[in-house]
Structure formats: structure tokens, C-alpha cells
Image 1 (cartoon, rainbow, N blue to C red):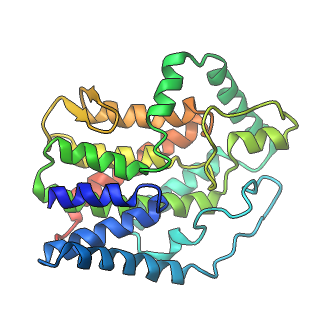
Image 2 (cartoon, rainbow, N blue to C red):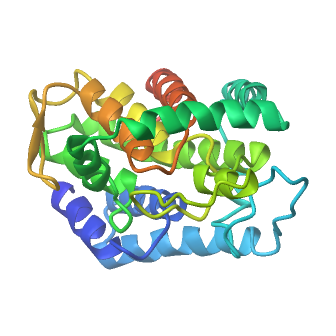
Length: 288
């Protein structure tokens, strides 16, 4: 099973955005668990992706106001957050409310967040830039990177399924909040507020800013994996060793701020969503 999961991560590199990646790998795993072949498991994963893709095909993105997210011509999967069930609706509602309180729709609050971002960016050093590159994950995807770390460090077999389902739920929750709040990315807000001389260190993804997907996925993973793998933790992707899963989650989340594509609050809310979701699933997820 472990080698099959590693193989499918390699096969999917550069092919699916994180929400579809999470769906594919979860259903791939469940099919292997039933005793089916590797190819049958791939078919099952693709079938679920195709089912949700068809379901959200006609979900159009509409701009509500001047502070709405609008940079990319084709935002990534705007309907995903409502196309698949989320197991903890109260947690989702709490995260959305917190995000809306932070990113109030007026120039004063938007400028305040941008000022905090600018102060942080002004102190950016070479080590932080290297961390931004390390966790870019634009091809392997954040959950793909995290899964390989978990597997490399002997995640307990009973927790693998919880983690894979957690990635699905993290994607649903994160995308639901993203397209409910529709917060602009730093580069967009700078353009809107007439500050055009800014180029983020890494490429800005084509979906709204809050919450950070990296923060959500990594904090969920840390919540589920802490105490359930060997330690220290070796990352086979970046060839680096971490003392704890909390260190991994903190570095992965901050990497997006270092890269210039997220606000500090995006990271904080993503960490909260991922951590609380992980704790919820450890208690409530029923093995298939």
C-alpha cells in the first residue's frame, strides 16, 4: 500500500490542483483497500474527480465589489467548496466569520493588512526566500508533499486513511472559505490601491488569498501525524529533517508569506482551520 501511494503521488505530479488531488488519492486508497488492482484504483480516483468536476462545471465566478478577487481570468475551482460535503459545518462557519471580520470591505482595513504585509516583506532575508522555494509545491501539491513526509516516517497505518480524508476535508473547507470571503492577494490589493511596483517572490496562485491552503493542509497533517510517526521527521522531497510536525506546519505556512502571496492573517486562519479539523477527524472519522 505504501509504495502504491508513493507511486501515485509521482504520477499525479503537475496534473491536478490540490482539491482534485486530494479527492483522487483518497478514492484511490479506498479502492486499493478493497483489494482492487492499482489500475482499478486509479480509475476510481479519476471517476470521483470527474464526478465533482461535472458537478461544479457550471458554477461561475462573479465579482461582487471592487475588493473582490479578480486577477486571474479563470479562478481555480470556485465551486469546489460547495460540491463536496464538509463534516464540521460549525468549524467552517467560525472560520468564515473570523475571516470576514479581519478583511472588512473597506480601504482602511485592507490598507492595514497590507501595511503589516509590507513591514514583513521589508525584512525578508535569504533564508526566508529559500523556505518559500522549498515549500512552493506548485507541481507536487501541498498534500502530496506532506503525504510523502508522513509515509517516509512510518505514519501508523490506521492514521493513513484519516489523513487522506483529512486532505479532502481541508480542501473543501479551505476552498469554501476562500470563495465566500474572496479576499484579494497582496499583489492585487497593491494594484487596487495604486501600488504597482511589487512582484512576489513566487508565483501567485489563481484562487483567493484567505485562508492559506498550505497552512490548512500542513496544520491538519500535523494534528493527525503528531505522535504517530517516528521522530525526528525526515522530508524525502526536500532532503531536510524537522524536529516536529509543528515545525513543519509552521514553516510551510510562513513560506507563503515569505513568498509574497499571502497575508499574515491568511496563515493564522488556515492554521486554525487545519488544526481543529484534524482534531475533529481523529475523534469522529469512521474507517471505510
